[in-house]
Amino acid sequence: MVKTIFITGASTGLGKATAILFALRGWNVIATMRSPEKDIDLSGYPNIKVMALDVTDPEQIIDVAVNVATKVVPDVVFNNAGYGLSGPLEGTTDEQLTRQINTNLLGVMRVTKAFIPLFRERKSGIFLTTTSIGGLVTFPFNSVYHATKWALEGWCESLSYELGQFGIDVKTVSPGGIRTDFAGRSLVLTNHPEYTEPLNKVLEVFADPSRTAQHSTPEQIAKVIFEAATDGQKRLRYIAGEDAKNIYMQRLELGGEKFRKAIDIRFFGK
Ligand code: NAD
Image 1: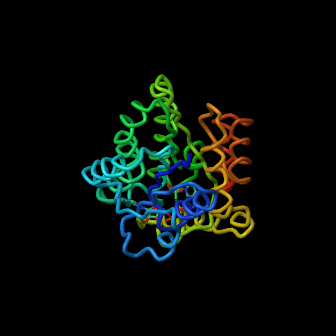
Image 2 (image 1 turned 135 degrees about the vertical axis):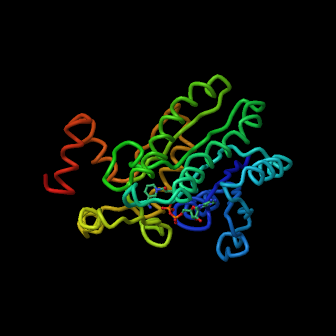
Image 3 (image 1 turned 180 degrees about the horizontal axis):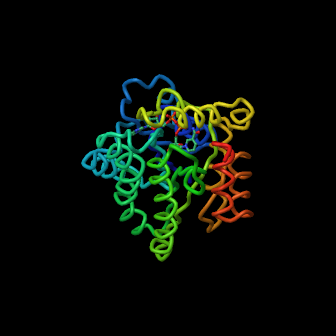
């Protein structure tokens, strides 16, 4: 029986690479994005259906879930839509704060909630969410992004107990750097005159070629998504990318306080 994956944020980057990988491996793919009329790649695949979905629109989420369910209940719902908000908290506007939380956190909760009854009645299904290594460790000047991704890691862990009762799996994929639009076109950068010097130091570390050389391609991370969707394991967390695995190992080995000190030294030399 051909399986189906439902993906949010599939117009670019990891969402798009995942849609293509699953389609090539014989799955049916429902690839959702805010502006499907702009898609020129995915609709060319016979087993990819492109649909409109903005994860900050609660009514559209319900309409799309109902519409999808009239044809098929997906085997996997892949919550992937999200973007980065970097820079000092003091420089954020309220609109930036709410949009970040609405997209990265509430969007995932609402999409998941819309599909729970369908999975519960069928007694199977996987909710897979792209969090980030930034949901398990932190770096300076990304506090709001970290807040959303740490929230997702904890939320998924708790939800896994609740939905496990009904045969539903909840999994997170926590990637390190991925070569997508994330750090370019998609990134929202806040600023504040009092933070210019430390912010520039941090941006320099992030842009260091020896660091970015360790980033993964979206296709590499999509393979981890495929593994999580198909390995049959009751496992919650998949750390994706060598950079993510290394830094997570450091955090576990050093413990939270020593790790935090090491990050301070790395970014600010103190
Ligand atoms: P990307 O910017 O290429 O893709 C993000 C996608 O989310 C885009 O297609 C964008 O249009 C979509 N999106 C944003 N807001 C949306 C909304 N309201 N409704 C629907 N779609 C929306 O970047 P990416 O790297 O492919 O990001 C995918 C996921 O991976 C994100 O959740 C991101 O936080 C996470 N992530 C990225 C990196 C990285 O370094 N690239 C690292 C760790 C985690």
